[in-house]
Amino acid sequence: MPKILIIDDDETIHLIGRAYLGKAGYEVQTAFDGPEGLQLAAAFQPDLVLLDINMPRMSGFDVAKKLKEDEATKKIPIFMMTSLKQESNIQRGYGLGIDDYITKPTNMAHLKLKIDKFLEKHKHQ
Image (cartoon, rainbow, N blue to C red; front, side, top):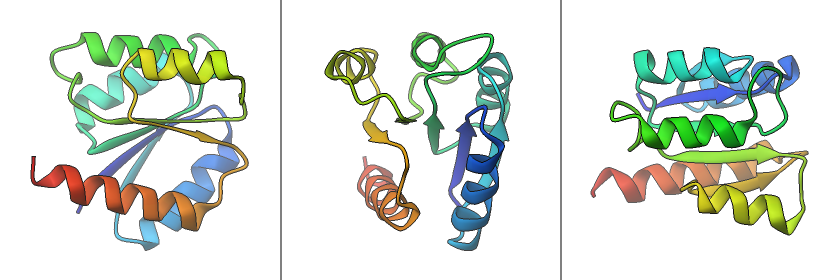
């Protein structure tokens, strides 16, 4: 069962993500901020991280940077999922090594298809 870690300070995102992705056959864990997310990423070793940018204590950009610098988590793919649509933020995210940039509000059916396709493609690499 593929594992997804959602790092987002919005409880609604946690609930929708858990319900929708859980029903689709994913094991879903959630964290409310960067430090909690980093700890969980190292312990849970997800197949994919869904990461918000605007969070208390640590931005998603800082979380992505730390995930990519840590030997234990650097290979975990990251989808940034945020309401920030500015080109500079998108470029910054990709510059940190993220795999996709998805803007909120997110269509969960579309997100699930993106995740399915991405994980299927990367399973064989």
